[in-house]
Length: 118
Image 1 (cartoon, rainbow, N blue to C red):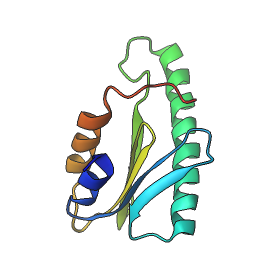
Image 2 (cartoon, rainbow, N blue to C red; image 1 turned 90 degrees about the vertical axis):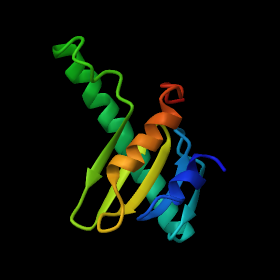
Image 3 (spheres, rainbow, N blue to C red; image 1 turned 90 degrees about the horizontal axis):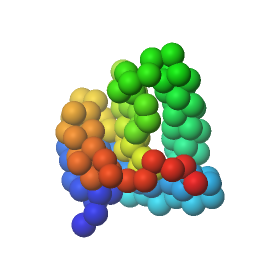
């Protein structure tokens, strides 16, 4: 089934997909229009690159702290959460889903993914 299908099978997951680091392609499944998915992939890519840069800067001041190289990010709002690892994104409803289950699945599937953002 693949990671996106597995994520979509988790309770509360509204949409999941992949984006290219170049920013020119994306794919998704779930409760989003194509335009919403396009905007989500742009937002996830931009935020991922910013988080990656910030972690690299922190790594200069904290060598060996275990944060570098960054693998992804997650944010939890009052109603929804976004989890991103490598170039995969997942949007979830907080009242139904569990970020722990989502992140565990993403980690298990993407831990060995390339860390290059090319």
